[in-house]
Length: 467
Ligand code: BG6
Image (cartoon, rainbow, N blue to C red):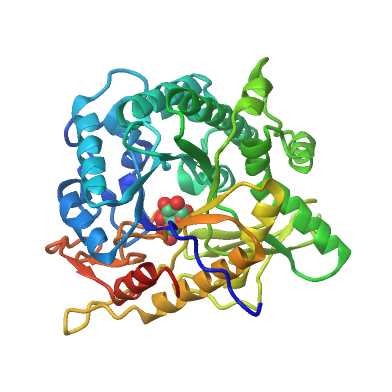
């Protein structure tokens, strides 16, 4: 381009966290246990989520620091188990009160709150009754949503339904959605998926009815799938995996229909969910105002060999590539460098993903996560020189600006994460924050907050509304 389009004037520059990864206070003030609290095993050498970054007690200090950086928005999640401890029973006034105080604090600094309603932390009491497989969870979620809208609807304009629903289905074993005892696990997962989609449509409708002008959207993890080569069979595999990994979720959220390829895949494999009478009407009626998505990287695939060897590649203990007989086979992308944790880094893939989503749905886009996990070190001067994170963020923002110049409508960017927190898969040594939290896996130290170099760089980007 001879000239780049500027970022929109009211662009929601922000940063992101989720409740269980940052709050701690896992059993305080009437909070019920979630599936995260009930989790017993952690990868060797990594901590649990009991104290996390102690944000529950230090939120004022944290939000003051977000304001110092100049954040215009803050994306966080509400813990369902603070609001309704067992998911469907009594409402917990102390939980309601905490999020009022948190939201008021955010607003008092002129920061726009963006609320995720559910970020992996299903109430354990619901899980014990079958979790999302049980249709009662749909009603429980709709009721929980109504409580949130009634309480906070006058203060919060932007709502996100379910964080990374697609990864909860695709990586059920890692994210606690999979019931190991079941024989046909995938069929169970795709029924959970259907039920979540119905729940999502219901709450999008409910917000629109209750709070005119409020906005709501899904927040999956989208990674466009590349064919490993120009071989037509590899392209076919990429179409297959794009349908199963990405479009199944967004076609339903945005168009109210099952993606054709994904539906045929589920039928063929015996995973197709049961659709109750009335479900399709609900699904068609739910209309998002925008699409939010988390972007970390793209994925490459090649044709399945169909011989049972389509491999599974793990980075650390995270599933990076997976294959499925007759559908696709995961492939490494040799054109891309990797993070210390093995995740491929693909800034141009970010532009590709933005273009692809906008082209399909023509809805405004919000990037709810993007970021670099690294072993940051506090140096002898008490500083954290994370220039590699600056490089990562800058390269992604350059591509985002190119996408905006391409004509893609983007209205906000909330990278992962506002401050250091406990990684979903790899403890607290895998740090993503703009702000350092002084603790180790098992030594809580003083939990002091220290701005990393990246936070100063990001502050300039926000101030100038330019790179
Ligand atoms: C997303 C999640 O999957 O990626 C976050 O929404 C998570 O909860 C983030 O922390 C990074 O993944 P990880 O495993 O490195 O923490």
